[in-house]
Image 1 (cartoon, rainbow, N blue to C red):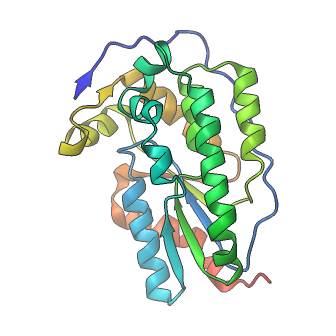
Image 2: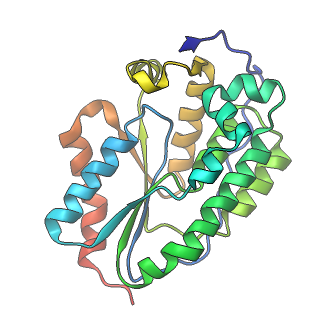
Length: 234
């Protein structure tokens, strides 16, 4: 795994636009977890599952992105080196459209009915990852506007959590994973992406400081999930 000098533009980041979601599905709840690798997303999902399991709430942990989409050559190139690929032959907005469409198809054809039966979904990445990556890479504002419009085809999540941590800690966590040793890490990309996720969390969602430890994160999750468990939506 490599850490490269940043090749990102020093220009100001594109604007972070609010997503105009469609109405929630219900009566089950859809809980989204968004963030960069190493920010604490998997731990947050596990803690949310622990809370729901202890309360006897039926739930599924879901990754909406299909294996077929993950195997696309340009997806693999982007996943391993988002900055280098976008600076070369890749195009992040195009990939973002593909990934959003793949997630939407998976959600509509399988999981809408699951939520309508009352099961909760804990979704590992929903719509904000392509948007935050576009902001981090300095994508054209018109392209980001198109991505934001496409994200609006998704139902509004009942809650969304954005685990955050300093970029250097995120990179250290990624470096510690043997499976990610081949990845090329650009510190500026991670700083920009974390800033974008923090900005998106201000649109009515919850930022989680993953440096505070699991007990603090669990308490923050419970503060949001608890009222949803005690309310009913038909």
